[in-house]
Every structure is written in C-alpha cells, then in structure tokens.
Length: 117
Length: 115
Image (cartoon, rainbow over all chains, first blue to last red; front, side):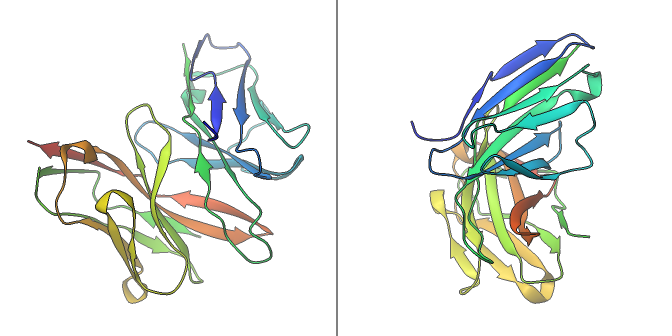
C-alpha cells in the first residue's frame, strides 16, 4: 500500500504524559500537513511542512505541541503534558508540489485517535 | 475570514432515494472546492473536487456536485443512495495562501441510510 500511514492508530494516555505520533506520507510528496479533528467537527489545520521546513503553524498549536520532519520524509507530532482537551483524532495528509499558483489535492492517512484520561 | 457551512448535521434517507448535501462557503476569490467522506474510524477519502471549468463535477461512487458562484454553494448529490453510503461527509475549501495550500472544512453532515 502506498498511501499515507500513521502510527499508532489509537493512543490512550493519562493526563500529564507525553505522546508522539508518526506520519509517513506518500513517498514522492514533498508537502505534509497535520490536522486535528474533535468529535462532531471537521478537521482543523495545525501545521504544514514543505520538505523539512515547517512553514506554517496554526494558533491551535500551543507550546505543548511540536512537529518535526527531519529529513523531509516522515513527520512526528509530539504533545507534552497532555490535557483532556487534547483528546481528538490527529490526521496527517500529504500532497505533491503543485507549482506556482497551483493546487494539488491532499491525501489523508487513517488518523491517530488520542484519548487523554 | 474563510469559512465553510454545512447546514445539516444529520440526514436520514431511505436506500434508493436521492440525496443532496448542502455546502456554502465564504471566500473572496474563486475557491478550490472538495467533498470528502469519512467512514467510522477511517481517514478522509476524496469524493470529488472543483478547480475550474465545468461547474458540474463527477466523482467516485456515483456522486456529483455543482458549483454555483452566485449562491456560494457546492452541493453534493447522488441519484440513488446505497446502504454503504452511510458515513460522514465533509465539504472543504482549499486556500492557496503564502505559497502553500490548506483546507478549511465544514463541520460535516452525518448520513444515515434506512433499508
């Protein structure tokens, strides 16, 4: 399967613990996105990478959140000192570079569902 | 600010009946528009997209959508619903800003299908 993969699919943690999620994009895609989806809502943009550079972070991404894409391939999203409000589905997506002024569709992974007790 | 509104939170239809899911957007320029479907525990699958050209676009699984600029709408339709269509449907606007793209999603419409 050559789609976007995410690991783990489910994570249950206690409040105050740190968690880390991994996303492996489609191999030829240089753009990678993280979204958060809470119950009953659509996904909300968190952050964006072009290759290894993190070019945009949403205000939703507090100081407890950090994302990396060290070699421009896979990405990790870490949440420190988790809170119950962090419980959500974390979705990763990737897309190829569309060129100047263009737009290419984003392909989504299955998500990591985080439950903070 | 850009936004997407899906007025119907839940819709129930009978199998074989027609379906229309509504989507309205707020965006200053010509938008890139998408419909995604999400089954329980799954990620998002793209049903169809509108970038430019013909305002009636065909997608997978027998879905189509019509872009109406005057109404700022991009409604999703299917002439005959199957039980397997039960899922959550998200409309999204794709923004090209600052040299990159991001998606703004609506809150979704959950579709239930009666046998």
